[in-house]
Image 1 (cartoon, rainbow, N blue to C red):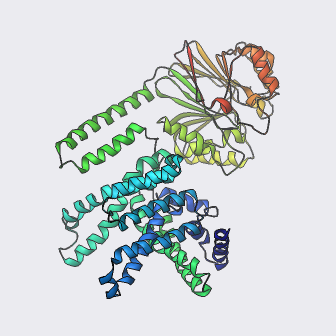
Image 2: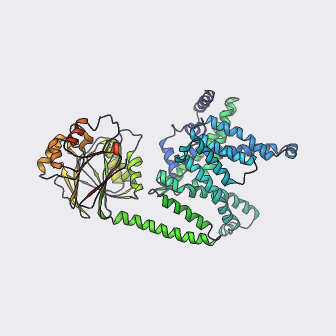
Image 3: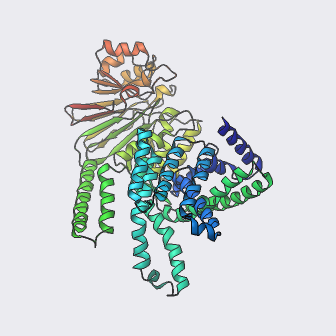
Length: 607
Protein backbone atom coordinates (compact mmCIF):
# COMPACT_ATOMS: atom_id res chain seq x y z
CA UNK A 1 0.00 0.00 0.00
CA UNK A 2 1.04 3.65 -0.40
CA UNK A 3 1.13 4.10 3.39
CA UNK A 4 3.44 1.12 3.77
CA UNK A 5 5.67 2.50 1.02
CA UNK A 6 5.89 5.77 2.94
CA UNK A 7 6.73 3.85 6.11
CA UNK A 8 9.40 1.88 4.24
CA UNK A 9 11.01 5.09 3.01
CA UNK A 10 10.97 6.63 6.49
CA UNK A 11 12.38 3.41 7.94
CA UNK A 12 15.17 3.48 5.38
CA UNK A 13 15.85 7.15 6.10
CA UNK A 14 16.17 6.51 9.85
CA UNK A 15 18.33 3.41 9.39
CA UNK A 16 20.57 5.18 6.91
CA UNK A 17 21.02 8.28 9.01
CA UNK A 18 23.49 6.60 11.34
CA UNK A 19 21.88 8.03 14.46
CA UNK A 20 22.65 6.08 17.60
CA UNK A 21 19.09 5.76 18.87
CA UNK A 22 17.43 4.70 15.63
CA UNK A 23 15.63 1.82 17.40
CA UNK A 24 13.90 4.20 19.82
CA UNK A 25 13.10 6.69 17.04
CA UNK A 26 11.43 3.94 15.01
CA UNK A 27 9.42 2.96 18.09
CA UNK A 28 8.24 6.55 18.58
CA UNK A 29 7.53 7.29 14.93
CA UNK A 30 6.74 3.96 13.24
CA UNK A 31 5.44 2.06 16.28
CA UNK A 32 8.15 -0.59 15.77
CA UNK A 33 9.67 -1.63 19.11
CA UNK A 34 11.34 -4.86 18.01
CA UNK A 35 14.87 -3.42 17.89
CA UNK A 36 14.85 -1.77 21.31
CA UNK A 37 17.42 -3.44 23.56
CA UNK A 38 16.34 -5.36 26.64
CA UNK A 39 18.45 -3.03 28.76
CA UNK A 40 16.49 -0.02 27.51
CA UNK A 41 13.18 -1.80 28.02
CA UNK A 42 14.15 -2.70 31.59
CA UNK A 43 15.25 0.86 32.38
CA UNK A 44 11.95 2.31 31.18
CA UNK A 45 9.98 -0.38 32.99
CA UNK A 46 11.81 0.20 36.29
CA UNK A 47 11.22 3.95 36.12
CA UNK A 48 7.55 3.75 35.17
CA UNK A 49 8.18 5.39 31.80
CA UNK A 50 7.70 2.40 29.49
CA UNK A 51 4.45 3.93 28.21
CA UNK A 52 6.57 6.51 26.37
CA UNK A 53 7.98 3.79 24.09
CA UNK A 54 4.51 2.72 22.91
CA UNK A 55 2.52 5.10 20.71
CA UNK A 56 -0.60 5.96 22.68
CA UNK A 57 -2.97 8.79 23.49
CA UNK A 58 -0.03 10.60 25.09
CA UNK A 59 1.92 10.80 21.82
CA UNK A 60 -1.07 11.61 19.63
CA UNK A 61 -2.22 14.19 22.18
CA UNK A 62 1.21 15.83 22.23
CA UNK A 63 1.27 16.03 18.43
CA UNK A 64 -2.22 17.58 18.50
CA UNK A 65 -1.22 20.07 21.21
CA UNK A 66 2.08 21.08 19.59
CA UNK A 67 0.39 21.42 16.18
CA UNK A 68 -2.47 23.44 17.68
CA UNK A 69 -0.02 25.73 19.50
CA UNK A 70 2.16 26.36 16.43
CA UNK A 71 -0.84 26.97 14.15
CA UNK A 72 -2.50 29.26 16.70
CA UNK A 73 0.67 31.32 17.15
CA UNK A 74 1.01 31.58 13.36
CA UNK A 75 -2.60 32.71 12.89
CA UNK A 76 -2.20 35.35 15.59
CA UNK A 77 0.36 37.05 13.38
CA UNK A 78 -2.53 38.17 11.15
CA UNK A 79 -4.76 40.76 12.84
CA UNK A 80 -7.28 40.44 9.99
CA UNK A 81 -7.73 36.72 10.61
CA UNK A 82 -8.11 37.32 14.32
CA UNK A 83 -10.90 39.83 13.73
CA UNK A 84 -12.70 37.81 11.05
CA UNK A 85 -12.54 34.28 12.41
CA UNK A 86 -12.31 32.24 15.58
CA UNK A 87 -8.67 31.31 15.06
CA UNK A 88 -8.84 28.95 18.02
CA UNK A 89 -11.25 26.71 16.11
CA UNK A 90 -9.24 27.05 12.89
CA UNK A 91 -6.11 25.92 14.74
CA UNK A 92 -8.00 23.01 16.28
CA UNK A 93 -9.38 21.95 12.90
CA UNK A 94 -6.00 22.19 11.14
CA UNK A 95 -4.31 20.19 13.90
CA UNK A 96 -6.34 17.19 12.72
CA UNK A 97 -4.01 16.92 9.70
CA UNK A 98 -0.77 16.19 11.63
CA UNK A 99 -2.69 13.87 13.96
CA UNK A 100 -3.88 11.78 11.01
CA UNK A 101 -0.43 11.95 9.40
CA UNK A 102 1.22 10.68 12.58
CA UNK A 103 -1.36 7.91 12.88
CA UNK A 104 -0.75 6.86 9.28
CA UNK A 105 3.04 6.89 9.63
CA UNK A 106 2.68 4.85 12.82
CA UNK A 107 0.85 2.23 10.76
CA UNK A 108 -2.60 2.77 12.28
CA UNK A 109 -2.13 -0.15 14.63
CA UNK A 110 -5.11 -0.96 16.84
CA UNK A 111 -3.70 1.03 19.77
CA UNK A 112 -2.82 3.95 17.47
CA UNK A 113 -6.34 3.95 16.00
CA UNK A 114 -7.82 4.19 19.49
CA UNK A 115 -5.48 7.03 20.41
CA UNK A 116 -6.33 8.94 17.22
CA UNK A 117 -10.07 8.49 17.81
CA UNK A 118 -9.76 9.74 21.38
CA UNK A 119 -7.79 12.84 20.37
CA UNK A 120 -10.08 13.59 17.41
CA UNK A 121 -13.13 13.52 19.67
CA UNK A 122 -11.43 16.01 21.99
CA UNK A 123 -10.69 18.24 18.97
CA UNK A 124 -14.32 17.98 17.85
CA UNK A 125 -15.35 19.02 21.35
CA UNK A 126 -13.28 22.20 20.92
CA UNK A 127 -14.92 22.87 17.55
CA UNK A 128 -18.36 22.37 19.13
CA UNK A 129 -17.55 24.67 22.10
CA UNK A 130 -17.73 21.70 24.46
CA UNK A 131 -14.09 21.62 25.46
CA UNK A 132 -14.91 22.18 29.13
CA UNK A 133 -17.03 19.05 29.31
CA UNK A 134 -13.97 16.85 29.75
CA UNK A 135 -15.78 13.94 31.37
CA UNK A 136 -18.47 13.80 28.66
CA UNK A 137 -15.83 14.03 25.95
CA UNK A 138 -13.77 11.25 27.51
CA UNK A 139 -16.88 9.09 27.89
CA UNK A 140 -17.82 9.73 24.25
CA UNK A 141 -14.32 8.73 23.11
CA UNK A 142 -14.50 5.50 25.12
CA UNK A 143 -17.99 4.79 23.78
CA UNK A 144 -16.93 5.22 20.14
CA UNK A 145 -13.84 3.04 20.58
CA UNK A 146 -15.79 0.28 22.33
CA UNK A 147 -18.51 0.34 19.66
CA UNK A 148 -15.82 -0.19 17.02
CA UNK A 149 -13.83 -2.69 19.09
CA UNK A 150 -15.65 -4.03 22.20
CA UNK A 151 -12.66 -6.18 23.24
CA UNK A 152 -10.55 -3.03 23.61
CA UNK A 153 -11.76 -2.78 27.19
CA UNK A 154 -9.42 -5.68 28.06
CA UNK A 155 -6.42 -4.03 26.40
CA UNK A 156 -3.83 -2.55 28.74
CA UNK A 157 -3.12 0.46 26.49
CA UNK A 158 -6.84 1.33 26.37
CA UNK A 159 -7.17 1.04 30.13
CA UNK A 160 -4.05 3.08 30.91
CA UNK A 161 -4.86 5.77 28.32
CA UNK A 162 -8.32 6.47 29.66
CA UNK A 163 -7.62 6.08 33.37
CA UNK A 164 -4.59 8.38 33.13
CA UNK A 165 -6.57 11.07 31.28
CA UNK A 166 -9.43 10.72 33.77
CA UNK A 167 -7.02 11.02 36.70
CA UNK A 168 -5.35 14.08 35.17
CA UNK A 169 -8.71 15.77 34.53
CA UNK A 170 -9.87 15.17 38.10
CA UNK A 171 -6.74 15.27 40.24
CA UNK A 172 -4.29 17.63 38.51
CA UNK A 173 -6.37 20.84 38.98
CA UNK A 174 -6.92 19.96 42.64
CA UNK A 175 -3.20 19.40 43.20
CA UNK A 176 -2.40 22.66 41.39
CA UNK A 177 -4.85 24.56 43.56
CA UNK A 178 -3.52 22.92 46.71
CA UNK A 179 0.15 23.45 45.92
CA UNK A 180 -0.02 26.84 44.19
CA UNK A 181 -2.97 28.82 45.50
CA UNK A 182 -3.17 27.33 48.99
CA UNK A 183 0.55 26.69 49.34
CA UNK A 184 3.05 28.71 51.29
CA UNK A 185 5.67 29.37 48.64
CA UNK A 186 7.11 25.87 48.87
CA UNK A 187 7.34 26.07 52.65
CA UNK A 188 9.32 29.30 52.43
CA UNK A 189 12.02 27.92 50.17
CA UNK A 190 11.18 30.44 47.44
CA UNK A 191 11.09 34.18 48.17
CA UNK A 192 7.74 35.96 47.55
CA UNK A 193 8.77 37.48 44.23
CA UNK A 194 6.69 37.49 40.97
CA UNK A 195 9.45 35.64 39.15
CA UNK A 196 9.44 33.00 41.86
CA UNK A 197 5.69 32.64 41.46
CA UNK A 198 6.15 31.87 37.76
CA UNK A 199 8.91 29.40 38.60
CA UNK A 200 6.65 27.77 41.16
CA UNK A 201 3.88 27.42 38.57
CA UNK A 202 6.37 25.98 36.11
CA UNK A 203 7.47 23.37 38.66
CA UNK A 204 4.06 22.55 40.13
CA UNK A 205 2.01 22.12 36.94
CA UNK A 206 3.98 19.20 35.45
CA UNK A 207 4.37 17.72 38.94
CA UNK A 208 0.59 17.80 39.43
CA UNK A 209 0.01 16.08 36.08
CA UNK A 210 2.64 13.42 36.78
CA UNK A 211 1.37 12.69 40.30
CA UNK A 212 -2.23 12.51 39.04
CA UNK A 213 -1.37 10.12 36.21
CA UNK A 214 0.81 7.96 38.48
CA UNK A 215 -1.87 7.66 41.17
CA UNK A 216 -4.59 6.99 38.61
CA UNK A 217 -2.74 4.22 36.83
CA UNK A 218 -1.05 2.62 39.88
CA UNK A 219 -3.65 -0.15 40.47
CA UNK A 220 -3.75 -1.03 36.75
CA UNK A 221 0.05 -1.13 36.49
CA UNK A 222 0.26 -3.25 39.64
CA UNK A 223 -2.41 -5.58 38.19
CA UNK A 224 -0.76 -6.04 34.81
CA UNK A 225 2.95 -5.65 35.60
CA UNK A 226 3.12 -6.43 39.35
CA UNK A 227 5.42 -3.49 39.80
CA UNK A 228 5.15 0.03 41.18
CA UNK A 229 7.76 2.62 40.27
CA UNK A 230 8.83 4.73 43.24
CA UNK A 231 10.84 7.09 41.05
CA UNK A 232 8.21 7.18 38.28
CA UNK A 233 6.71 10.58 39.15
CA UNK A 234 10.06 12.37 38.88
CA UNK A 235 11.19 10.32 35.87
CA UNK A 236 8.01 11.15 33.94
CA UNK A 237 8.33 14.86 34.70
CA UNK A 238 11.68 14.84 32.90
CA UNK A 239 11.22 12.12 30.26
CA UNK A 240 7.78 13.08 28.94
CA UNK A 241 8.69 16.69 27.99
CA UNK A 242 12.03 15.65 26.51
CA UNK A 243 10.78 12.68 24.52
CA UNK A 244 7.13 13.59 24.01
CA UNK A 245 7.25 17.33 23.37
CA UNK A 246 10.66 17.48 21.71
CA UNK A 247 11.98 14.18 20.34
CA UNK A 248 8.66 12.93 18.89
CA UNK A 249 7.68 16.16 17.04
CA UNK A 250 11.23 16.56 15.73
CA UNK A 251 11.28 12.94 14.62
CA UNK A 252 7.95 13.38 12.82
CA UNK A 253 9.12 16.61 11.15
CA UNK A 254 12.36 14.98 9.99
CA UNK A 255 10.45 11.96 8.65
CA UNK A 256 8.16 14.15 6.57
CA UNK A 257 11.02 16.44 5.51
CA UNK A 258 12.98 13.43 4.23
CA UNK A 259 10.62 13.35 1.22
CA UNK A 260 11.32 17.00 0.40
CA UNK A 261 14.80 18.02 1.55
CA UNK A 262 16.88 15.19 3.05
CA UNK A 263 19.77 17.37 4.34
CA UNK A 264 17.36 19.38 6.51
CA UNK A 265 15.61 16.17 7.59
CA UNK A 266 18.94 14.64 8.57
CA UNK A 267 19.80 17.70 10.68
CA UNK A 268 16.46 17.59 12.53
CA UNK A 269 16.77 13.84 13.09
CA UNK A 270 20.22 14.28 14.62
CA UNK A 271 18.77 16.91 16.95
CA UNK A 272 16.04 14.45 17.95
CA UNK A 273 18.73 11.81 18.52
CA UNK A 274 20.67 14.13 20.85
CA UNK A 275 17.53 14.75 22.90
CA UNK A 276 16.88 11.01 23.05
CA UNK A 277 20.47 10.38 24.12
CA UNK A 278 20.00 12.75 27.06
CA UNK A 279 16.60 11.22 27.85
CA UNK A 280 17.90 7.65 27.85
CA UNK A 281 20.85 8.68 30.00
CA UNK A 282 18.52 10.24 32.58
CA UNK A 283 16.15 7.26 32.55
CA UNK A 284 19.11 4.91 32.99
CA UNK A 285 20.35 6.90 36.00
CA UNK A 286 16.92 6.74 37.61
CA UNK A 287 16.70 3.00 36.91
CA UNK A 288 20.00 2.41 38.73
CA UNK A 289 18.75 4.05 41.92
CA UNK A 290 18.00 1.64 44.78
CA UNK A 291 14.31 0.77 44.92
CA UNK A 292 13.56 2.70 41.71
CA UNK A 293 10.69 0.25 41.41
CA UNK A 294 9.37 -2.51 43.62
CA UNK A 295 7.47 -5.66 42.79
CA UNK A 296 4.09 -5.94 44.43
CA UNK A 297 1.34 -8.50 44.85
CA UNK A 298 -1.61 -8.27 42.50
CA UNK A 299 -4.35 -5.99 43.84
CA UNK A 300 -7.86 -7.39 43.99
CA UNK A 301 -10.78 -5.47 42.50
CA UNK A 302 -11.86 -4.57 46.05
CA UNK A 303 -8.39 -3.19 46.82
CA UNK A 304 -8.35 -1.12 43.62
CA UNK A 305 -11.79 0.33 44.42
CA UNK A 306 -10.67 1.13 47.98
CA UNK A 307 -7.52 2.81 46.65
CA UNK A 308 -9.53 5.15 44.42
CA UNK A 309 -12.14 5.73 47.12
CA UNK A 310 -9.45 6.72 49.62
CA UNK A 311 -7.91 9.19 47.16
CA UNK A 312 -11.28 10.80 46.42
CA UNK A 313 -12.23 11.02 50.10
CA UNK A 314 -8.87 12.52 51.06
CA UNK A 315 -9.01 15.07 48.23
CA UNK A 316 -12.62 16.02 49.00
CA UNK A 317 -12.28 15.67 52.78
CA UNK A 318 -13.17 19.32 53.53
CA UNK A 319 -15.94 19.50 50.95
CA UNK A 320 -18.73 17.49 52.57
CA UNK A 321 -19.34 15.24 55.55
CA UNK A 322 -20.04 12.25 53.30
CA UNK A 323 -16.36 12.14 52.31
CA UNK A 324 -15.32 12.00 55.96
CA UNK A 325 -17.63 9.02 56.46
CA UNK A 326 -16.37 7.50 53.22
CA UNK A 327 -12.77 7.80 54.39
CA UNK A 328 -13.60 6.07 57.67
CA UNK A 329 -15.54 3.26 55.97
CA UNK A 330 -12.85 2.71 53.31
CA UNK A 331 -10.15 2.58 55.99
CA UNK A 332 -12.09 0.02 58.02
CA UNK A 333 -12.74 -2.15 54.95
CA UNK A 334 -9.05 -1.91 54.02
CA UNK A 335 -8.05 -3.09 57.50
CA UNK A 336 -10.56 -5.94 57.23
CA UNK A 337 -9.19 -6.90 53.82
CA UNK A 338 -5.63 -6.96 55.17
CA UNK A 339 -6.76 -9.08 58.13
CA UNK A 340 -8.46 -11.56 55.81
CA UNK A 341 -5.35 -12.08 53.70
CA UNK A 342 -3.09 -12.25 56.76
CA UNK A 343 -5.25 -14.99 58.26
CA UNK A 344 -5.58 -16.78 54.91
CA UNK A 345 -1.80 -16.81 54.39
CA UNK A 346 -0.71 -17.64 57.93
CA UNK A 347 -3.48 -19.51 59.73
CA UNK A 348 -5.03 -21.86 57.17
CA UNK A 349 -4.94 -25.35 58.79
CA UNK A 350 -5.16 -27.18 55.45
CA UNK A 351 -2.39 -28.28 53.10
CA UNK A 352 -2.78 -27.08 49.53
CA UNK A 353 -0.84 -28.04 46.40
CA UNK A 354 -1.17 -26.19 43.10
CA UNK A 355 0.31 -27.68 39.94
CA UNK A 356 1.02 -24.48 38.02
CA UNK A 357 0.41 -24.50 34.28
CA UNK A 358 3.88 -23.55 33.03
CA UNK A 359 3.72 -25.09 29.57
CA UNK A 360 6.17 -27.89 28.83
CA UNK A 361 7.73 -28.15 32.27
CA UNK A 362 7.05 -28.70 35.95
CA UNK A 363 6.23 -26.34 38.79
CA UNK A 364 4.14 -26.93 41.90
CA UNK A 365 3.45 -24.71 44.88
CA UNK A 366 2.95 -26.44 48.23
CA UNK A 367 1.23 -24.34 50.90
CA UNK A 368 1.71 -26.03 54.25
CA UNK A 369 -0.62 -25.47 57.19
CA UNK A 370 -0.08 -22.17 58.99
CA UNK A 371 1.94 -20.33 56.44
CA UNK A 372 5.03 -22.20 55.22
CA UNK A 373 5.47 -22.51 51.43
CA UNK A 374 7.53 -24.73 49.15
CA UNK A 375 8.04 -24.35 45.39
CA UNK A 376 8.94 -27.62 43.67
CA UNK A 377 10.58 -26.79 40.32
CA UNK A 378 10.01 -23.55 38.45
CA UNK A 379 9.28 -24.56 34.89
CA UNK A 380 11.26 -23.08 32.06
CA UNK A 381 11.36 -22.62 28.32
CA UNK A 382 14.24 -23.75 26.16
CA UNK A 383 13.98 -20.31 24.52
CA UNK A 384 15.60 -17.25 26.10
CA UNK A 385 12.76 -15.03 24.86
CA UNK A 386 10.27 -16.15 27.51
CA UNK A 387 11.04 -16.31 31.22
CA UNK A 388 8.52 -18.70 32.76
CA UNK A 389 9.48 -17.58 36.25
CA UNK A 390 8.82 -13.93 35.47
CA UNK A 391 5.79 -14.40 33.22
CA UNK A 392 3.92 -17.32 34.84
CA UNK A 393 5.20 -18.53 38.21
CA UNK A 394 5.81 -15.13 39.83
CA UNK A 395 2.45 -13.64 38.68
CA UNK A 396 0.70 -16.71 40.11
CA UNK A 397 2.45 -16.18 43.44
CA UNK A 398 1.74 -12.45 43.45
CA UNK A 399 -1.91 -13.04 42.64
CA UNK A 400 -2.10 -15.18 45.77
CA UNK A 401 -0.37 -12.46 47.83
CA UNK A 402 2.77 -14.58 48.24
CA UNK A 403 6.11 -12.78 48.52
CA UNK A 404 8.02 -15.32 50.61
CA UNK A 405 9.05 -18.88 49.68
CA UNK A 406 10.45 -20.93 52.56
CA UNK A 407 11.77 -23.80 50.43
CA UNK A 408 12.66 -24.15 46.77
CA UNK A 409 13.10 -27.73 45.59
CA UNK A 410 14.75 -28.47 42.24
CA UNK A 411 14.13 -32.06 41.16
CA UNK A 412 16.99 -32.03 38.64
CA UNK A 413 18.90 -29.41 36.64
CA UNK A 414 17.09 -29.41 33.29
CA UNK A 415 15.75 -26.27 31.63
CA UNK A 416 12.05 -27.15 31.84
CA UNK A 417 12.36 -27.52 35.62
CA UNK A 418 14.91 -24.88 36.66
CA UNK A 419 14.94 -21.86 34.32
CA UNK A 420 11.99 -20.23 36.03
CA UNK A 421 13.64 -20.43 39.45
CA UNK A 422 16.25 -17.72 38.81
CA UNK A 423 13.64 -14.96 38.77
CA UNK A 424 12.00 -16.36 41.90
CA UNK A 425 15.35 -16.45 43.70
CA UNK A 426 16.03 -12.84 42.73
CA UNK A 427 12.64 -11.26 43.40
CA UNK A 428 11.19 -13.24 46.31
CA UNK A 429 12.22 -13.73 49.90
CA UNK A 430 13.57 -17.29 49.63
CA UNK A 431 14.90 -19.02 52.73
CA UNK A 432 16.27 -22.36 51.53
CA UNK A 433 17.12 -24.21 48.29
CA UNK A 434 17.44 -28.01 47.98
CA UNK A 435 18.33 -30.12 44.96
CA UNK A 436 19.81 -33.50 44.13
CA UNK A 437 23.35 -32.12 44.05
CA UNK A 438 23.80 -32.69 40.32
CA UNK A 439 25.48 -29.90 38.36
CA UNK A 440 24.92 -28.91 34.75
CA UNK A 441 26.74 -27.12 31.95
CA UNK A 442 23.50 -25.35 31.05
CA UNK A 443 23.83 -21.57 31.39
CA UNK A 444 20.51 -21.54 33.23
CA UNK A 445 22.04 -23.67 36.00
CA UNK A 446 25.02 -21.33 36.37
CA UNK A 447 22.75 -18.28 36.50
CA UNK A 448 20.47 -19.94 39.05
CA UNK A 449 23.35 -20.84 41.38
CA UNK A 450 24.75 -17.32 41.02
CA UNK A 451 21.35 -15.86 41.94
CA UNK A 452 21.17 -18.11 45.00
CA UNK A 453 24.62 -16.99 46.15
CA UNK A 454 23.93 -13.32 45.47
CA UNK A 455 20.74 -13.39 47.53
CA UNK A 456 22.30 -15.38 50.40
CA UNK A 457 19.90 -18.29 50.03
CA UNK A 458 20.89 -21.39 52.00
CA UNK A 459 21.71 -24.36 49.76
CA UNK A 460 21.48 -28.05 50.64
CA UNK A 461 21.71 -31.25 48.63
CA UNK A 462 19.13 -33.93 49.36
CA UNK A 463 18.81 -37.65 48.70
CA UNK A 464 17.35 -40.84 50.15
CA UNK A 465 19.59 -40.53 53.22
CA UNK A 466 18.52 -36.96 54.02
CA UNK A 467 16.41 -36.68 57.19
CA UNK A 468 12.79 -35.78 56.58
CA UNK A 469 11.47 -32.30 57.33
CA UNK A 470 8.62 -31.60 59.72
CA UNK A 471 6.81 -28.50 58.50
CA UNK A 472 3.86 -27.44 60.65
CA UNK A 473 2.54 -30.96 61.05
CA UNK A 474 3.37 -32.14 57.53
CA UNK A 475 6.29 -34.49 56.84
CA UNK A 476 8.51 -34.04 53.77
CA UNK A 477 10.54 -37.11 52.81
CA UNK A 478 13.17 -37.44 50.08
CA UNK A 479 12.89 -40.86 48.40
CA UNK A 480 15.31 -40.49 45.49
CA UNK A 481 18.14 -40.50 44.47
CA UNK A 482 20.04 -42.91 46.67
CA UNK A 483 23.41 -41.74 47.93
CA UNK A 484 26.27 -42.77 45.60
CA UNK A 485 23.77 -44.09 43.05
CA UNK A 486 24.93 -43.17 39.55
CA UNK A 487 21.96 -42.91 37.21
CA UNK A 488 21.22 -40.49 34.40
CA UNK A 489 19.76 -37.03 35.04
CA UNK A 490 16.09 -38.00 34.79
CA UNK A 491 16.42 -41.07 37.02
CA UNK A 492 18.39 -39.04 39.55
CA UNK A 493 15.42 -36.71 40.02
CA UNK A 494 14.82 -35.66 43.59
CA UNK A 495 11.57 -37.46 44.48
CA UNK A 496 9.61 -35.80 47.27
CA UNK A 497 6.79 -37.29 49.31
CA UNK A 498 4.62 -35.04 51.49
CA UNK A 499 2.39 -36.56 54.16
CA UNK A 500 -0.23 -34.62 56.08
CA UNK A 501 -2.21 -36.75 58.49
CA UNK A 502 -3.95 -39.30 56.23
CA UNK A 503 -3.23 -37.58 52.90
CA UNK A 504 -0.04 -37.80 50.84
CA UNK A 505 1.48 -36.37 47.66
CA UNK A 506 4.29 -37.82 45.53
CA UNK A 507 6.40 -35.55 43.30
CA UNK A 508 8.51 -37.57 40.87
CA UNK A 509 10.37 -35.11 38.66
CA UNK A 510 11.34 -36.80 35.38
CA UNK A 511 11.74 -40.28 36.86
CA UNK A 512 11.75 -43.08 34.25
CA UNK A 513 11.36 -46.87 34.44
CA UNK A 514 14.86 -47.50 35.84
CA UNK A 515 14.39 -44.89 38.53
CA UNK A 516 10.90 -46.14 39.35
CA UNK A 517 12.27 -49.68 39.85
CA UNK A 518 15.07 -48.38 42.09
CA UNK A 519 12.54 -46.38 44.07
CA UNK A 520 10.33 -49.43 44.60
CA UNK A 521 13.33 -51.50 45.68
CA UNK A 522 14.32 -48.98 48.37
CA UNK A 523 10.87 -48.14 49.70
CA UNK A 524 8.30 -50.60 50.94
CA UNK A 525 5.48 -48.07 50.90
CA UNK A 526 5.28 -45.28 48.34
CA UNK A 527 1.50 -45.08 48.23
CA UNK A 528 0.11 -41.57 47.74
CA UNK A 529 -3.29 -40.01 47.25
CA UNK A 530 -1.98 -37.61 44.59
CA UNK A 531 0.76 -38.42 42.07
CA UNK A 532 2.63 -35.94 39.94
CA UNK A 533 2.97 -38.11 36.82
CA UNK A 534 6.66 -38.88 36.08
CA UNK A 535 8.33 -37.24 33.07
CA UNK A 536 5.22 -35.50 31.71
CA UNK A 537 3.59 -38.79 30.71
CA UNK A 538 6.40 -40.15 28.53
CA UNK A 539 6.39 -43.79 27.37
CA UNK A 540 9.56 -44.42 29.41
CA UNK A 541 7.79 -43.76 32.71
CA UNK A 542 4.66 -44.75 34.67
CA UNK A 543 5.32 -48.49 34.71
CA UNK A 544 2.48 -50.75 35.86
CA UNK A 545 4.35 -51.89 38.98
CA UNK A 546 5.06 -48.31 39.96
CA UNK A 547 1.46 -47.16 39.49
CA UNK A 548 0.11 -50.14 41.43
CA UNK A 549 2.50 -49.40 44.28
CA UNK A 550 1.53 -45.72 44.42
CA UNK A 551 -2.18 -46.42 43.83
CA UNK A 552 -3.15 -42.75 43.63
CA UNK A 553 -6.66 -41.34 43.77
CA UNK A 554 -5.57 -38.62 41.36
CA UNK A 555 -2.69 -38.20 38.90
CA UNK A 556 -1.65 -34.81 37.52
CA UNK A 557 0.40 -34.42 34.34
CA UNK A 558 2.32 -31.16 33.94
CA UNK A 559 2.99 -30.45 30.27
CA UNK A 560 2.53 -28.01 27.41
CA UNK A 561 -0.31 -28.10 24.93
CA UNK A 562 0.61 -29.75 21.62
CA UNK A 563 4.22 -30.13 22.77
CA UNK A 564 6.87 -31.41 20.31
CA UNK A 565 7.48 -34.58 22.34
CA UNK A 566 3.99 -35.97 21.93
CA UNK A 567 3.39 -36.03 25.70
CA UNK A 568 1.39 -37.57 27.20
CA UNK A 569 1.80 -40.73 25.16
CA UNK A 570 -1.53 -42.40 24.30
CA UNK A 571 -0.41 -45.75 25.70
CA UNK A 572 0.39 -44.10 29.05
CA UNK A 573 -3.02 -42.45 29.23
CA UNK A 574 -4.58 -45.81 28.45
CA UNK A 575 -2.53 -47.40 31.26
CA UNK A 576 -3.88 -44.91 33.80
CA UNK A 577 -7.39 -45.49 32.49
CA UNK A 578 -7.05 -49.28 32.78
CA UNK A 579 -5.87 -48.89 36.39
CA UNK A 580 -8.84 -46.57 37.03
CA UNK A 581 -6.63 -43.64 38.03
CA UNK A 582 -8.26 -40.25 37.28
CA UNK A 583 -5.95 -37.93 35.34
CA UNK A 584 -5.87 -34.13 35.13
CA UNK A 585 -3.55 -32.30 32.73
CA UNK A 586 -2.26 -28.75 32.98
CA UNK A 587 -2.36 -28.37 29.18
CA UNK A 588 -6.09 -29.14 29.16
CA UNK A 589 -7.29 -28.28 32.67
CA UNK A 590 -4.92 -25.41 33.44
CA UNK A 591 -3.57 -25.06 36.96
CA UNK A 592 -4.75 -27.88 39.22
CA UNK A 593 -5.22 -27.20 42.94
CA UNK A 594 -5.59 -30.01 45.47
CA UNK A 595 -6.46 -29.09 49.06
CA UNK A 596 -6.70 -31.44 52.01
CA UNK A 597 -7.46 -31.25 55.71
CA UNK A 598 -5.53 -34.49 56.11
CA UNK A 599 -8.63 -36.61 55.62
CA UNK A 600 -10.54 -35.68 52.48
CA UNK A 601 -9.26 -34.18 49.22
CA UNK A 602 -10.81 -31.32 47.26
CA UNK A 603 -9.66 -30.71 43.69
CA UNK A 604 -10.14 -27.54 41.65
CA UNK A 605 -9.04 -27.22 38.01
CA UNK A 606 -8.67 -23.79 36.41
CA UNK A 607 -10.48 -24.97 33.29
